[in-house]
Amino acid sequence: MMMKIPWLRRQARAEPRVSTSGTRCRHPVFFNGAEEFSYNLKNLKRATIIGETTGGAHPVSGHRIDDHFMIGVPFARAVNPVSKTHWEGTGVQPDVPAKASEALEVAEKMAASKIQAK
Image 1 (cartoon, helix red, strand yellow):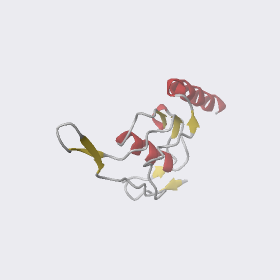
Image 2 (cartoon, rainbow, N blue to C red):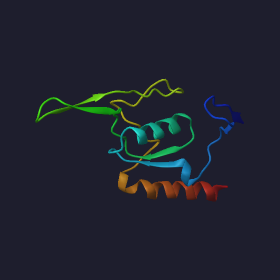
Image 3 (cartoon, rainbow, N blue to C red):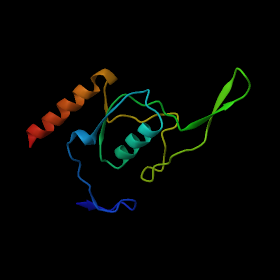
Image 4 (cartoon, rainbow, N blue to C red):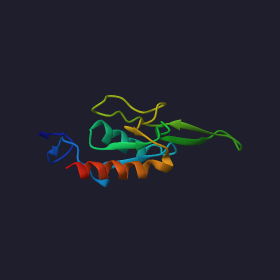
């Protein structure tokens, strides 16, 4: 089955594939770009997200208030075109919850079992 995605030049296969590039291990300290990347792949059903829920923050710009204080003000919000939502305040929920220290091992076991099943 083929799926046409407007922002891609080529058609993409809709069925999931097992590969190390299709598996993303998540940790709660990752914010912004890494979150958006994971969130988009998850909503496009192009990756299995393994690990912990991310922090749930959008990009912020630091502004100094005085000599001792600074405030972080959000300046952007990414909204996924598939889900019409974002991850602010909730983070990216993994497909397979696992401790960050165990996520890579879980991903390797899952990939190996899918390959052996073929």
